[in-house]
Image 1 (spheres, rainbow, N blue to C red):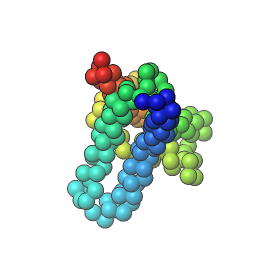
Image 2 (image 1 turned 90 degrees about the vertical axis):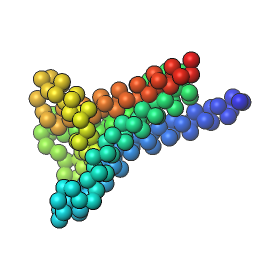
Image 3 (image 1 turned 45 degrees about the vertical axis):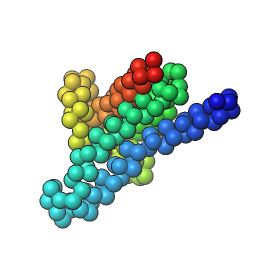
Image 4 (image 1 turned 120 degrees about the horizontal axis):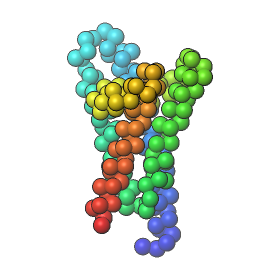
Length: 169
């Protein structure tokens, strides 16, 4: 392939990673919508409960496959890891500022978005396991949940990248 074509492919893959990085935010908004509409009048086993249970696992699987595909386009895992998790790192920083500096969540769009990003991970058993392992380090429940979720996303991407590199070799 020509040098221009490879550069263009990597440029579009960088943009795709940033866009995929916002997927948990969209799923978190859908969770909130389901909780405010469907679950308000129906029992927990009603329509939408499967979506809430499976969406967190779907994000972890998508992060794994993004790592596998990034292994073909990038030599190092640092750049795609940061591009894919930039939205999560920004949301975690917002939660950190809101919880530690202000001691309350903002009542505006940014305060909601920082919480919606991590909403799909509430039902993940993997996040709960990391949560239990780290609970002695961080006394705040929300911060612990946020950083456990972020750790699981980074770990899934890292595993996918390693798997992609091992298949290429």
